[in-house]
Length: 257
Image (cartoon, rainbow, N blue to C red; front, side, top):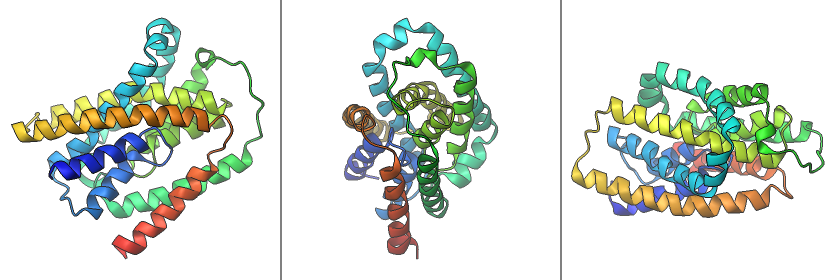
């Protein structure tokens, strides 16, 4: 993997991390399209640069994180299902699921169909003054259980948590923002686990590639978050579902058939 690959993958990560279209899935498929061998370093790189995108959430929501301590309890509660499953099935996730384009494409398409169906089923909600910290512990746990399904590349962590929030009765804005915040412990935990399991066995050049990817994904993600918050004020997630289906089918026909 060279610097060109790093730039492309980091841009893809920054754009897709918080959209319900699967950043991991896009990274896997982008790497496959560029004929990047799925080595342990590449798989670790794809996990670690997501932490750069997560840092953008900390930047934008710093005041909320520092003042809304009751919200933290709900974030940690929502994080637990993924933490348990991720730790238990780490060898399966790293060795079989991550880097598998066939699984990723299938999850993208099925997830897109599910996103459209759920949006069609949900009633249109009026804009309310419900605050993010008003999310109940039950709603937080249901979102966390939904997030656990995102261990499969292509499912989308953001998509799963947003759908979990919508099914739990949250507004689109609150579902999206809680998804942003839940990403913090989730990706910090995933990155820490990966570094421990790989024993941080990277060369100086590989660390430099990681640093470039980290910074670039952070910058792009800042812009993507701001765009998504404006988008959900007047739009549903059906467009993302349609995109997932079209992208998944097109990728299959071009690269996997």
